[in-house]
Image (cartoon, rainbow, N blue to C red; front, side):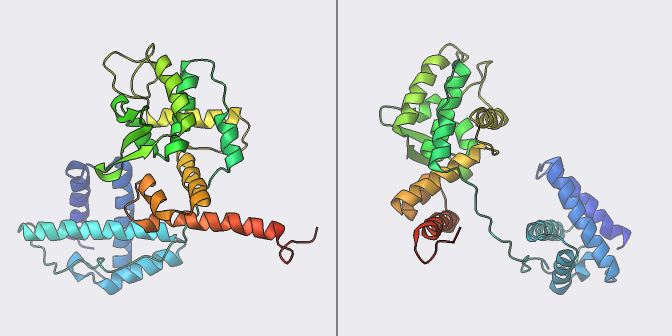
Length: 307
């Protein structure tokens, strides 16, 4: 590649940090992906960005796959290339740098389809064991309340830690949640979660700062952070002897799986989870089928395996 072409990569990185304000981790990942593209272009004898076409980008994706890169990593590489060319075309339209680009060569290129991994869940007995904690202080009451709420209402971790007191209506047994994209939804709160929250609210009064609106606070009386929730949930799982790693999103997966298993109402589960597309919710139908398949294998006369 020419020095001028490499200079555009450096300008793109400055654009990512200064204008897009991406994290250093994301910027470094984009830089690695573009460095791989530069090496591929040099092997192909391409010295400037306007000479890169769709076939070359497809070959770059295929070469990455042959080199052992997984579909998700290739998706990220192609995303980096698309973003880079969007930046170059913006500069062209602004009349800067004499760019001669006519189109984005990565626009129509797709990565190999990644196998869809089924989310891990806890079964009903495991969940009951985890939630059967016996708090001995205010923080324990808080932890039981937030875990009950996670499972009762299928909240994301960011939704949980973003809750304010004003979002909770225990009389109506609902909570107003601000989901992805700032989309609000109202979800029900289960009976046991209501009881746990009532206990926590009494304890919270002696712990929270006077001006703190957050529903869940830390020992200093300020809003509880996502990392603290992750650590507390993992600690309670160990204390309860579950024998497997537990994270907050596991409550959401378990909520959806158990609800769908009992009701079969896919649209209802979609609304409760706040999924914009029902195809996102459909993954839980596979979990439900796995549950049925295990029952079938264990009980049907023609399916039981000999000991």
